[in-house]
Image (cartoon, rainbow, N blue to C red; front, side, top):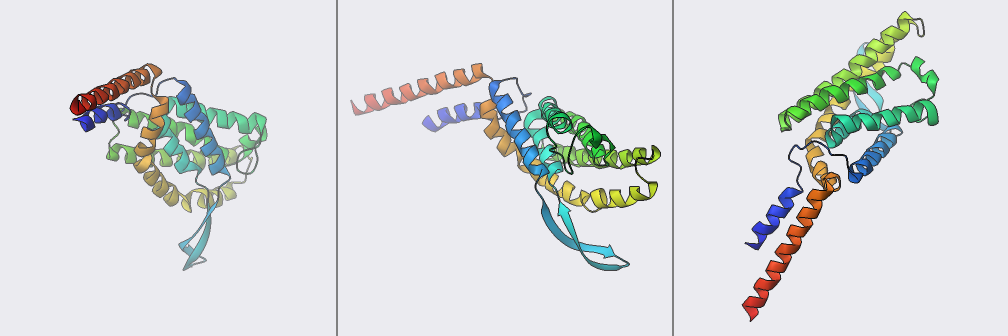
Length: 240
């Protein structure tokens, strides 16, 4: 009986698809997610896989940056609106405050072929956030991750084409750039994004303790204290 009472309390702290509320805890989690995005920008993981190199199958070295799966993870943790807030702060910081992007920052970054992938982040947040609003089953989460990654790489490719049309880069560089950024790494982006969003509910329940509206937390604390008092009274009656 006691375990059931505590189970009712713990169930109240588990996220059940509620929209992310505006609380101090949510802003703290947003700051933490911004830090995750920042750290992922400067993180590099080296992989070696089989690939067609100069007409023969050989091992190819790939320097992988995990910012895409980290963004997919953040979309699930915060939802569409607050993940967009985190990304906008990240974007404005890199453009106007400090060069935190890969290969620098500043307003001149608009001419960098990587900026198209940042535009893709906006579409990924909208698409993945909308899918996750429908329901948050495993199948839906995996679809949200897949379509989010595809949106990022599609925008990256189209932005390279636009830069070539305006003669910012040579047309002959479009395919080599897309090959390095997308063809070599999209499989890793999809794989790690699927893993990240599969385990994201566990972390969402942890963060939800902070993000949950204060009134609900106070109500739960009051109920918990009442249960503790009832348990103490039951033990007193038993020993008396």
